Length: 451
Image (cartoon, rainbow, N blue to C red):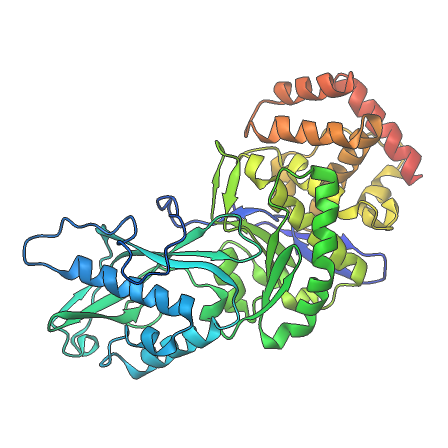
């Protein structure tokens, strides 16, 4: 979805009010790599994984050599073999790079990995310029497309993949990893995970995992304490047609937060974002889903506010597989808020203060549902749009049933961008009421609850 959303206000049951983003669902860019393979065998002599071409020119052995290097590197991570991992790094590479590679291995120590592997695409080569001082006597440099394939134990139902920026060097008949996007390859784009920014602290629960750093351990412990009940709350509304597991990430710095959620977000003002690496609408699956929290803001949330935020975001995770881009935002965000606020104990007036102000004005009518553009506004206009969206979903649940609201969501969200007439038809079939009747009933519902 498009980025650059304005700030949205969560009203907690206590006095604290926190500004967060209005967009809580994002599919990250980075192309569409081939499907992830089955988890590799532990045998170091297993066949090369799919994507490693064997059609190199006669006499050119770099493709199988780098394929073997990547397999050794992945095996070293899985077996927690530090010496074998560092043996894949060019001994004549920049000292700072070699040190960062050692730190990377150490940072991964506590990450629960069900899969860690690499895919080499020899047909896609990155154009990288290396000044002579960066070559360090290398006889040949090569930067093919390499994707990291990984799966978090207890959180990911299937592996996900993200592009890596790697530069390989040949010395004699042996190839090494010499540099990456962060070092000697300006302009080489690559994804960076939490382990690229510091030691990762992993806290597993029965229904997920929280990845954080030592500096935000206190917030991570609060999140861990809420995670399982939040997953259960989402499942109680949405049903069990999702994995029922989630990974929550708490970055340590603004740089890390920006790297994880993308450049389109004003990260200083967001509390949480639900992201996915890619979505398969046909299979109704989403890979690499994460709830990313801004620990600075999350630390200031009251227990009730943190609970609402987590349930809202996990609601996006649960529904993402059936949600096609272009679906009406009032539905996506209103339904996520419905999940977030359900059984929260937060009164409607406190959850929707801008809506309450408007309802109390003479001659108020609910008018129309917010357009997508309304959920791109800033300040109180954004709050008003979100609160109207949420209140309409609450109204539908009381007019029909929660189960019927879930059916409405599935019907509308699975179609992506559709005409209002189609939306009205789906709502009419579900409620027995036409557009005008629904609007009038919604208005009466708001007047009853806010006056």
